[in-house]
Image (cartoon, rainbow, N blue to C red; front, side):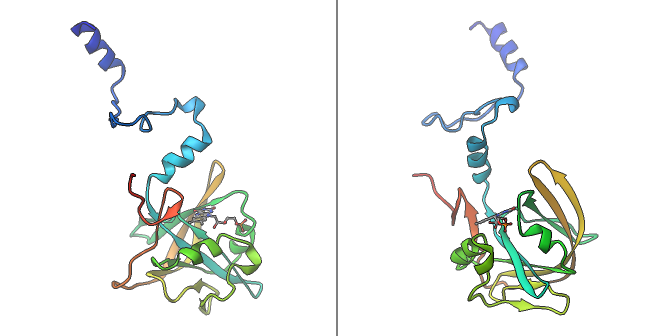
Length: 191
Ligand SMILES: Cc1cc2nc3c(=O)[nH]c(=O)nc-3n(C[C@H](O)[C@H](O)[C@H](O)COP(=O)(O)O)c2cc1C
């Protein structure tokens, strides 16, 4: 390739992708029109997150889910968000709650996280929970806690982004959070 061609090639692809020359798995899998869901899932999983329990007492039953899509959003007003699948069978009940409790799970909560994503009728079986006066449910041995109400919901493809307004927060310094990465718990190092 002559210099002028190389220059033109660079100009037509202003965004360069850094690839690890030892592997091919960092290659861009496709342009937006042919993104494969498996590839998308794997790429999303490269981004490590924490895991929260979102839970409340509704009609005298504790309902909730595990969610890794939690993130802080705004200090003023105080907002956090998570994304819930439009196919969720729990959300129609959970969104009726006056207040929703959000617990940032601790590193020993890996089984708890799986349980909170499992069959709805046993999700809270044998779990230590606290229900406040407004019905928000939290797990006392977490890392941080938020008392919230639904501020706004935004349709976003196959998920709904739920913005939660904060009414009370607490956290502890001496515990480590549960990390979700590449479909597993803990940070997965390349082998
Ligand atoms: C670690 C982990 C993180 C999860 N994060 C989310 C999430 O952010 N959003 C979501 O809709 N479901 C998430 N799920 C799945 C839900 O916990 C739950 O299994 C799902 O909503 C189906 O149950 P439902 O039909 O009762 O809602 C996650 C599951 C696990 C194990």
